[in-house]
Image: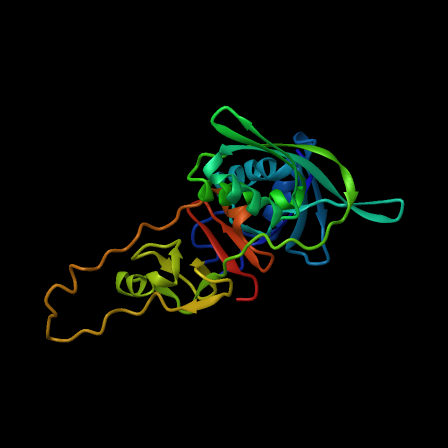
Length: 287
């Protein structure tokens, strides 16, 4: 597992302090320093901002376990997108590369190759393996962040992925890991079924009717590549006339549920993951 780093900070969303017991930067800093005494693979660095810390760990799973432990202990915080740690070798900026192996049904092999090559992966081996297609790639480690979820979605959950660190090599350029934009709430309050139903053609939602949301919260994934502000709080215009059958015709798709690790991989560079003992929320940094 390759080293990763994560920005920890206090929760400064509109719902600050509503669900957690330990919410101050001092409490979070003390807890992180305490963890370094027994978790030798963890390293905590202070930043210029008093309420922000950079935490180094052995991959997303390692850092995810720490965050999950903290939220169960009553801590409330927010984290940024995980970053792979780079090195300067002989004056050249280098990044870690990994060998990625994917076994997938032949019908989905083209989609699997497309997803990996979008993330600067190079196909090395392609050969049949029983009923599956065996694929091997050389890919920058940062290209793997968020790849598993997209791969399982594209292959109907039939892809088997493994990867291992290979070596540090020169930086390979920018990677566009997320091709879909975000649906961002423009109002605060409980989401309504009427508003969600009306906007279902815009994408898929991460919230359900009656979930309380705030301005700047990422409430869904846009069907296009740009971000879009939506109003999920707006209710139906009430009249004393009822339209026959219109209320019964409302069919809302279930909200998309993310685990902690999936949320950490999903967020973009300009987003935070708000972590509380009760909730996981994605939000724009400048909101």
